[in-house]
Length: 164
Image (cartoon, rainbow, N blue to C red):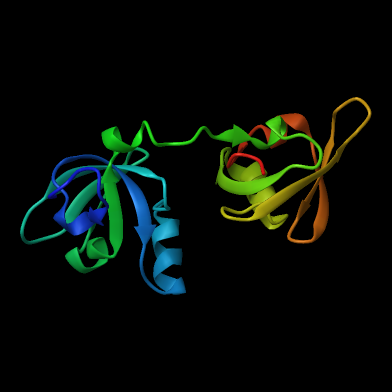
């Protein structure tokens, strides 16, 4: 990579830690990358990248290879250069009534994660905090036009952008 502070294709990355800046391709391609855990702002580690053959990467402890064509459509930036620019993430529990933001990540596993996703809490969805119950639990949210109630401990597992 020529300059670490600029976004470059993953196919030209050297070994090291990077953060995904953007993904280029159709819906099917983006969906396939998402199923592998590759989203914008995801930290990845390039294990090996030669002139030929796949680019070996590690994402959240899982290693796999990407073909050069696929890797060329993923723009990355060195993680160490971006850390200072990175904004603080919030949990949905930290939002106040009347605030809104976008979902960055759903933490949790199994039935909880599946249930949350089925209710519309997916990466990139906008969430509005309608109101808190009198004892602050549960919290009422509006997601994709639907009113949904979550407990505070469930809302804490949803990572959000800065509220606006």
